[in-house]
Every structure is written in C-alpha cells, then in structure tokens.
Length: 419
Image 1 (spheres, rainbow, N blue to C red):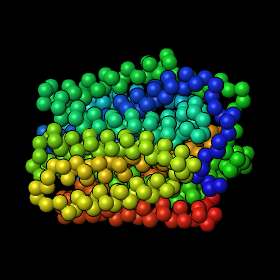
Image 2 (image 1 turned 180 degrees about the horizontal axis):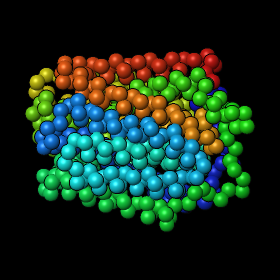
Image 3 (image 1 turned 45 degrees about the vertical axis):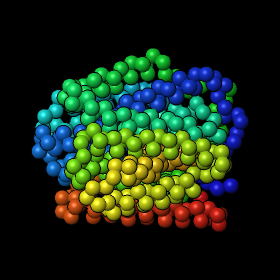
Image 4 (image 1 turned 135 degrees about the vertical axis):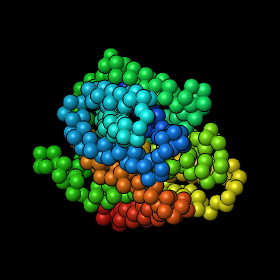
C-alpha cells in the first residue's frame, strides 16, 4: 500500500451522523464567504486600475501582500488549531476577513488596499488548517477526499459568484457598497459559529492515526517534514499555487484589456473557471476515493496536464477570439488551477494524521503559498515588460514542471520507493 492511500478503519466513523453535516455546513459556508474576499481582487482589478491609477505590477503586489500574510500566519495558526481546536480559530479567522472586507469598502488609496489585503490574507491563511482539522474529526477516512472536495467547492462557488457579483452590483450601487454588503455577511459568521459549532464528535475512543505515520513521541512533526514525499509535494504545490494566483488575479483584466470585452463578460470567465473548479473538486474526490482506492497522486498529475493545455492555449489566441473559445479555456483553467485544492489538502492531512494535521498543513502550505507571494508581481512585471503572451508562457512552464513532478511521484510509488 502506498503512502498516499487512506485507511479503512470502520471504528473511525462518528456515531452522530446528523450533526456532522451541521459542522460541514458551517465550515463550508464560512470558507465560501471568505473566498469572495479572496477571489474578489480579480473582478475588482479593472475598477481599481481605473479609479486609483494602479498598474499591473502594483496590482500584483496587492495580491502578493495577501498571500504573504497567509504564508506568515499559516504555521503559527496550524499549531494553534492543534492546541485550541477549530472552533475558536474559526471565529478569529472569519472575524479578520470580515474586518478586512469592511475596511476595503472604505478604501481609496493604494496603501490602504495593500494593508487590507494583508489583513484579509492573515485571516484566510488559517482557514484550510481549521476546516481540515474539523472534517478529519467528523468524517471517516473513506469519505475524506470526497467531503474535502465538496467543502472546497465553497471556495470555488464563492469565486464564481464574486466574478458576477462585483461587476454587476458595482454598476448598480458602486463597488464600495457592494463590498460593504459582503462584509456584513462575513461578520455574521463568527456569532453563528460560537452558537452552533461543536469541536468534535463524542467518540468512545479517539480514532487511531494511520499506522504508517511516524511515532508522535519521537519527534513526529520533524520526521514528517523530512520525508522525501512531503518535501516533493510541498514544492509541487507551490507551482500549482503560483499559477492559480496569477490566473485568478489577471484573467478578468486580461480579457478586458486584450480583447476589449465588457467588465461583466470578462468577469464571467472567472465565474466559469470557478464553476469548473467546483465540479472538478467533487468529481476528482469521488474518483480518488472510489475508483482509485485513495490514490491522490494520479489525479493531481492529470490536473496539471490539463493546466498545461489551458494556459498554453492563451498564448495562441488572436486579436478577436470567439467567446466560446475563451469559455472553453476558462473551463480548462478552472479544472486544473482551481480544482486541485481538495486533493492536495486530503493528501497532506492523511500523511499527517489527526494529531498533527493543523501543524503540518500550516507548514506545508506556508511554503507552498510562497509561490503565490512571488508569482503575481513577477507576472504583472512580465506583462508590463513583454506582454501577456510571455507571462502566460512562463506559467505554462511552471505547471508543466508540476505535471512531470507528480508523474515522477507516481512512478516511484509503482516501484515502492515513496515514503
């Protein structure tokens, strides 16, 4: 059995099957609302550039500030989730993003936007550790990739809706008021979580961690981080994250500037990409759980291959490509660069086990989010210097390396060399 496959211990099934869906709903809806802040920068970009005179490099630095804050808080928040549990950290995380969204609605300068992005990133940087910790307790192993994929659809649905919500509502009430409504919705969630969230089910005994994991009494976290598989996956996730951050931040403004499309139509491409990612997270989670018996690596390699096709296609477009072709490319981009998260999180969580899931998630994704910190300003600078084609080609190379990397992991699995 390879290191990425989940156990099938029936004792891990929580007895309170009804309330696990309440927990799932709280975690998913919180992630959904926070994702509207996270992915809102792409649809906001044309308005921010027009009203505040921000160029592509500055837009990249705003997005980078958000990712840097995510990376900065990821490790300490992971330890705090393991120590204090998901409930307290969920309320803190959502409160930070809600506050950032409220301040964003009042922002009028580049400096404030930069600081708002950092504050929101600090809150958003905790959510994966929190939701994974909660779902690891409440759902049995043979459902985790599916449940994690469905939970992650809250992220992509949020990204889909914000791609339509901001351009449409901005025309009616202005972008500041549209953001203010979103802030109010986010700030309602900490109170809801305080009242209804339960830390974990009442089990007769704690489900055992995967027996493949290092002994927690012997420096398990250090041993986990030194495993070649963990190191390799962390670096490959960084490539995925770099490409995702650039596509999300620049797809809307690219289609508006390069092809002269309206903001609503340009925003719809991000919506389509997010919708494709939503479906992918569910379908690939089911395929991984049911058809591939817990193998997470093969689907990750396939998603990277789809990403190569989607990003490279952007470099081949003429001056007036048909809209249907842009939507097809958006589907490919969303399938790959939005759909990978659920599998990645499940893979890391299963390697870590219950005890260290928050800590290991924090460390692995801190390093991975380094790709998100570096890539947007580099992409923006490349656009200002050489144009969009060169920037998209750069991303094609990065996701191509990820494809080769996951293929290599799979081959080593077949030979029994992965640990």
